[in-house]
Amino acid sequence: MPIPLDPADPSDRNTADTIKWQCFKREVYHKVAEVIFHSLRWPARFGEAMACGDKIDRVIHPGIPVKSVDGEESCALTATRAALAKFPCPKCLVCHDSLTKLCGNFQCRTTDNMEKVYKRSITASNKTEAERILQAHGLHATKNFFWSLDHSDPYCSISYDKLHSDDLGKWGKHIWPLLYFEYADGQVFYDILKVHRRTHRLKQYIIQYEQCCEHISNNYEKDFHFSKQHAINHILTEIRQKGATDNYDTRVSEGFHQEAQEAYEQTNRKDTDSQMARIDENQEAIAHIRMTVDNYDKAHHNDTEDQDLGDDAGRNDDQRSTQPTPDNHWMLGSPTNLTSSVVMEHCEGLKGFDKRLRSFLVSSCNVAVGDGPISIRKYQCIYLKYQSHEDWSEGRDILRCNPNFNKESRFDCVLINTDTSEPVPARLQTVFRCFLQSSSFDIVSVKIFKPSNGIPRTRWSGALLYDEARDFKLVMAKSLIRGAHMIEAFNLKEGRFYLNDLIDGDMFLRFGN
Image: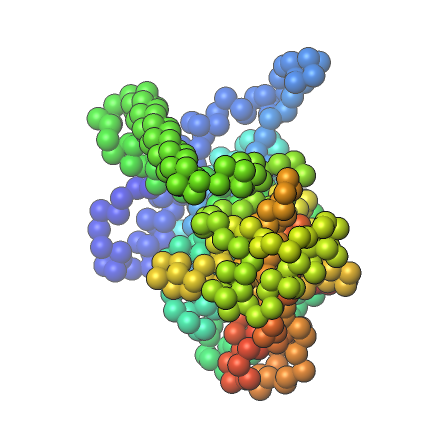
């Protein structure tokens, strides 16, 4: 949509001029929308016969039931007066003083009642009366194009936008700065904030959130009277009408806008579609060539390393086992040189490793182990695929156990599948593959986190506190589930950690929420 450039300094305008300028921008918006969607008007009202995907002819009535826009665009689309108005919400007639009442009931805007307000204003006896009518409903004197497009109610179709309302909005600009500092990337906020929401519990969460905001207002003088805060009031209705918020989130293709803008800047501003398509083709071709060269170099490097090792049998078994298979949900990466269990015990400081490994192979793998050294190859990375408990989609974690990863030691944490109702968190210590005659086994040395009896000075509702074991334990790689995030507890005994079960919906559900 075109945004008219402001020819003057906004600070030089009085209130009347500001309203007039905003109204002008709304009129431009809806005139353009009328041109874009004009061809849908008659089919939306009277229908149009067309062959559907199942080859059956039907009369179709097109419309726009969902509009994915940010806060400013939603006000332009509904021709409302935005944040500073007495009634700023594009979906309902909530007064500005009631924006913090997240569970209140407010009159909804509809095409019928807003069109009536507009008609009353244009037939008013004078400009003052017309302005009073419009101001009492937070409207501009703009004829909304979507009133005339059936199945496209502008107020009902405006949708809750997680990116701008939550990640860049309430969380990123208002709450997170109180805790730490500001970011500028909505995806960063999304990664921090991601937690599962289910409709049967969401209302209670909203009540708790409202109470927390009231506490923050009283103790930190934070004002929550803004439209994005009030938008939560509509979220339950949005989900019931339109499904999960992912269906109408503006995050989709948000990054592509910048890419398209960069391509546009390389054109001559005439017949840009074909030029931008060619630019995109060239970029894809260059990326494909670069990826092919990189893959070749990587494969050539690995082949050279394997030839230098000189252990053909171990090498072939190693290469076969590192490839992903339908039966394995894990894959090992960053291999080191071939070694033995005895060398591992002395070089890695794993007391009793050789003896414990032999006992573990007999009990867990049901294989005979001779008296000679056990051939081992260490790996410094493991890839874990898992199925989300939230939506059953496939996820993947890349976990490191490397004493020198970018000049820092890095030993990631993982969840282990046990007989308990909840998975057990542990810290990776060593990931390795044992070679026994014609078979190989992927095994992981970990330090288990056990529930702690410690009492933190600041207690968090539902916080899970753990003590990290000092001794290692051997587990099969197939027992690993996915990565975990353990947060070191301050002002407590060393080796105590909080489990972060809010990194995503899957983790939230795995721990009984």
